[in-house]
Picture 1 (tube, rainbow, N blue to C red):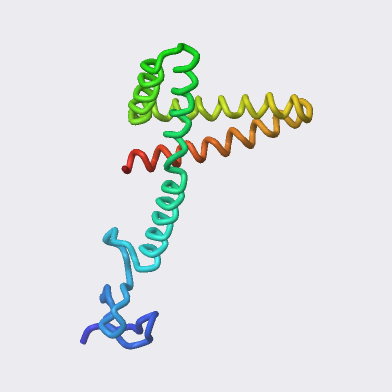
Picture 2: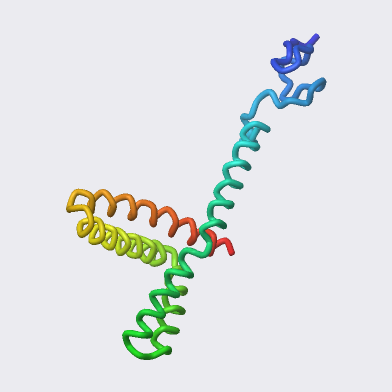
Length: 152
């Protein structure tokens, strides 16, 4: 006669070597690398929240690149320059490490603008605080937008 134990989920008697309860269908051990229902739901929820966040920020980088391209087009008085900047930055964003660098540089630029504006309006200390907040916020939004563009 084989050794038995009680299922930790439903309390019914099952074989001691059982991997899944024959009464309630719950998995009893996960040594094979599979994922249990609770972890699967948590993983799905996390992935869904990240995808939603990325989609909400999806337009951040294209808008920033568009503004930069238009500004440089005006500075150089050439729409070709603007188009080249727009396409060039768009392509650079898709290159793994270069795209990360572009997002980082854009965030540093916004942090600097935040520092200058904060220093001018409220003093140097406020400038640093604003720079840090703007830099961290724009990093999150830029990387989120980039992730959405990569998935797109």
